[in-house]
Structure formats: structure tokens, C-alpha cells
Amino acid sequence: MQITSRISVDEKIHFGKPVISGTRVPVNIILGKLAGGMDYKEITNEYKIYREDIFAALDYAAKTLSNEEIKVVD
Image 1 (cartoon, helix red, strand yellow):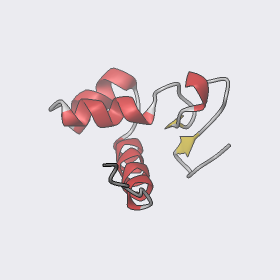
Image 2 (cartoon, rainbow, N blue to C red):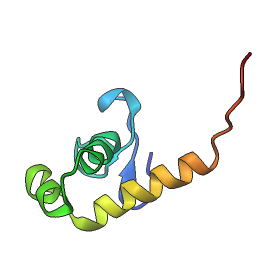
Image 3 (cartoon, one colour):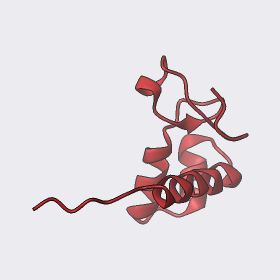
Image 4 (cartoon, rainbow, N blue to C red):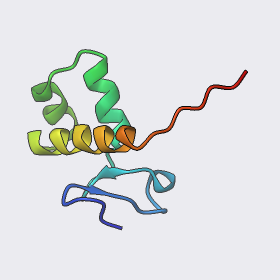
């Protein structure tokens, strides 16, 4: 299933987790690499993806988090 032009989900690839379309690179890996300090050039070289793929991963994460509801449990 195509989520965006650059993000897709297939239950046969990484247990249905979002990946960069046409690759097996999970969105969460890209986000983790950015959080760990890698810059986009290092990520694009290591995973053979495009800068636009990284932006798509960030956009996907932002949109997903904007719909998140946090419930306080006492």
C-alpha cells in the first residue's frame, strides 16, 4: 500500500512497517540515524536513497505524531 509517493507499507516487508518506496529501508531506521547525528549525505550514501526520501520520512513521522493521543494513567 502506498502511503505517500515515497513511503509504502507491505506486510511482506519488515512486518508491514513503513519503508522508503522501492527499497527495504524502514522509515524508523532513517529517523534513528538522524537522531543519532548522521547527516543526510551519510544516510543517502549508506542506504542508497535520496534526500527527498529523508524529507518524506520526517513528514510521515510528523503527521503520525500529530494524531497521537497521550493518556495519563494513574
